[in-house]
Every structure is written in structure tokens, then in C-alpha cells.
Length: 509
Image 1 (tube, rainbow, N blue to C red):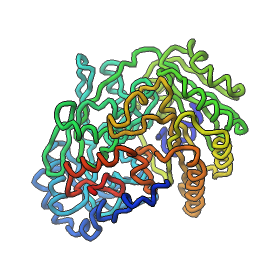
Image 2: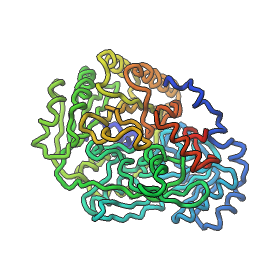
Image 3: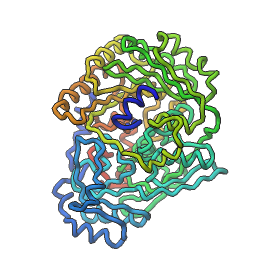
Image 4: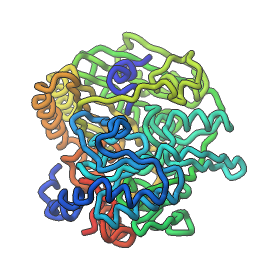
């Protein structure tokens, strides 16, 4: 198992998601973005229950054991208290919940996997209706069309396994098996076949969406084209609740190679330099990450969509710029085994473990940030600044460079304005993560460390960040860039009363 998975198994089990802060366009009051707390809490439980009752969906309210069980908190920094949980199994029940939220003036939030870094799956504040979509797990594979239609309650592990069993196909998405497909796809969705097949939002062919007036619409290349555009990168609870996706699927029946190379702490600067040099010319069939931590973690790993006999040639431009690794693992196997390995399971595990029947869902107390670096990558001074800052940090932190770009990457062959996901000239994204779990006194210094490191490397990177690693301190411009004004215009069309909102949703103005 590679260094990254070893570290993250104990934290999140395979989980992988600015200067313009002073811009007055993004300093609107909370009233522009979320419903005031007094309004959100105005309706009592009995009123909400009465409104929800006709749809006959299962519900949970404060004070019940079911409510406490449902109130799963991913980031333990936050302990939001929803007004109610709704567990729909039909679109009509979702429509009812949306209608009640609009009628009663209560915030509403869909939840799929519940992995929001800022716990926006619980609304990002108290007093909202949480619509738990885990009852939506129907799947239909159209082999002739090369598509799959899935309920938005699917998690990535069960979805990958189902697609493998249906036809040895997949959708490009992340490694953590318990992440929900809904939020992941609507915020981008990067994974270890993304440089070949794109991010997950690129594979969305159609979405079925419950919009603010309680009706259901389809967004595809013919109907509601602009809504589909918005959903593909900015759709997580800003425009409606997606109940169903149709994705283009991709063949993964051929042999694949999983690889991992470990280097010394003293070689961290060398691996960063080699990573960004090689990444610009890497073939599309390889997608990789570089894991670094203050304790000396220095691990380069990924998936090559081909036989191991070709791996040396594929990685040559990287290996030519680093010393010999202290440890290495190369496994020629099939796609579903790479999914097991990257998900934190044994390569010899029965693939059925991806169905998560006995899976402990991860929680942590953490602060995360991200930053996008464009080609050619950090300058020499940038690498030095990053590594020196990193090595001065707490042991309970880590940094993951995910390779997005390079000349061969399919991700970067799409224009920034072709979908809401704007980061089409990124070379790599860095996830910056610090956690303190059972030591709350550590939180202040850890947060200061991660903020200071981000500020230190910002002059060598860009003002952009990856929205699936949502950070409440970032402006919307970091996530949506030149697409933001169009996203605001679409918000006015589809949700002029701002029914779907959270602290970093697309605003109406």
C-alpha cells in the first residue's frame, strides 16, 4: 500500500476534495447567500413535519435517536443542527421537500456521501432541511449508447464495482469509496484515469434536477443546455437537487499498472521539481499524485493504463530527475484491483468490499485548503519556499499534488468556458490538509500553519482553487474564475429566490 493510502486510512480511509478576498463583489451580506438564521429557525418541527407528511418520506427530527444517527459530521470542527432530515426514495418526495423549504422559508441541502470539507452537506449552518439522497441508487447501463444512468445517492465504491460488473467500464472519479457521486460530479471529480477520460463532470450527459419551484427538469445537450453547463462544475446545491445522472462510460478492460515510489525527506524538493517537469509531457494514459508531509513522507504514485513492461519508458522523464527510490511497488493488474488499492483495501480483497456494507465512514477534525499551479509549475524559489514551509509544519498535516494537466491531458483539451469547471490550464492541484483529531488545543496553530503556507506559495501559483476541496476562506472567484458572472446569471434564471444556498453557493447578485 502506498504512503498516501497508509496515511489516509487512519484519517479518512483513502479520502481524497486569495487576493480577491477584498473584492466587494464577493463581500455581500449573508442575506445574499443564505437565509437569515431567524427565518431558517422560524418554523417549528411540527410545522415542518406537517408540510412533509403528505409525501410519506421517512423523516427524522431533533430529539430522536434517528436524528442523532443521521447527523453524521464529516469535519468535526462543525456540529450543525438541521431542522429535519428527509430520506426520499422518489422524485415526488424530493419535490415535496423543496416545496416545503420554499414555503416555510427554510434552507435546504441535499446530501449524498456527506464528504463536504466544510460540512455543507448539513447546510453550512443550523436549521435547514437535509435531503438525504442515499435512497437513489438505481442503475441502468446502456451498452449501445456507452452511457449509464444512476441515482445521485450512489457512492463511488459501489458505483465503480457495479460498472465493472456490468461491462468492465467506469466513470473517471476519485479514490475514496464512500464519497457520493452527486457532489463529486457537480464539483468536478478528479481521479486516476482523469488525464485519459477527463474529470467526472465532463462525463455528465444528462441530469434530472428538482428546481426551486418544485418541478423536475432534464438538462442535456438539447434541453436546458445552460443549466447543464452550470451543473458541470458549480452544481452542488446552487441550482437544484439532482436526483439522477446519465454519464458517458469508458472502457477499462485492458491491463493496468499500479505503481508507487518512495523517496527520502531530503529529496522532497527534487521530487517536486521532477513531478512538474515530467507532468508537462506525460502521456494521457498515466495519472499520478505526489504525497508529501513534514515527517518525511515523499511518495510518487498512480495508475498507468497499460502493461508494466512499458512503465519505465512512461516514467522516464520523472525518474531521470530523481535519485533511486528507497522503496517501490509495481503491480500489473486489472482496473478493479487498482480501485481496491487506492481505496485503502488489500489488493487481494474481494471486490465486494467496495459495496461498503461493513465500512466505517471517516470523520476528522481538520482544516483544508487547495491551490492550483499552472505550467511550467513552481519556480526554483517556489519549490524552496514550499518545501521549507512544509518541513516546518506539524506532523499531522500532508500535501497532495494531483496531476491535472500536461499537453496530453484530456482535462486541458476542453476550453475554460465550455463548462462551469474553469481550471483547464492547470498543471496540478495541491490539497493542503492539517488535522488535530483529539487535540483541540492544536487547532489554532495548525490552521495558522496551513494558512501561512498557502500565502507563502501563492506568488508562485495562481489565485485558483479546486471547489471539491471547499474552503470557507476562499472567494468564489477562486473556484469559478471567468465563469462566475455567467453562473450568477444562470442562478437568477433557475433560483431567483435563492432557495438553494449555503455560505459559498452561487449568489443571486
